[in-house]
Amino acid sequence: MRAPRRETPVSHTAETPAANAIRTAGELKKLIAGKGRPDTTQMAAVLARISIVMADYLEGGKPIGIVLNPVEILSAVAAAIQEAEGRPSPWPDGADARTFFIHGLYDEIIQQPSNIFETRIFPDGTERYIPLDKATWKACLQRLHEQIIASGTKLGQRKKRGG
Image 1 (cartoon, rainbow, N blue to C red):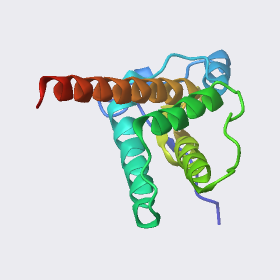
Image 2: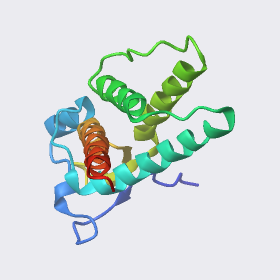
Image 3: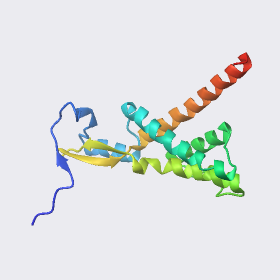
């Protein structure tokens, strides 16, 4: 009996746009190295997923009395951006419970690209699931960082106005 194929050959349709196609070995190398262009069409979905994961993790700190402030959350996101750029985390494993918890948030964030898949069409015409590409992941983290800063700025302005 012949083993089933792990990839499904597809033609370019509205559901599988040619933009997702990898046409050459060079494009594949760029994708793997994270040097391609970020796929901005995926940002909203990826940011929603990261936000849920972070909210779930942060909720887990409440029973033990740990509620991170925005600066601590931003530092975990900034460390994840560094990791996405190939630099190691600047966070120590945890000198105290709070530092350990922040490092845990960082760990939750950096695990997400291996849990988020996209489909790509390879040069042989097959469609395959691959983990989210590095360029898109890094762009999503940068956008998340910007959104957290913007939210903090808006909150600060409301407090100044007395509302």
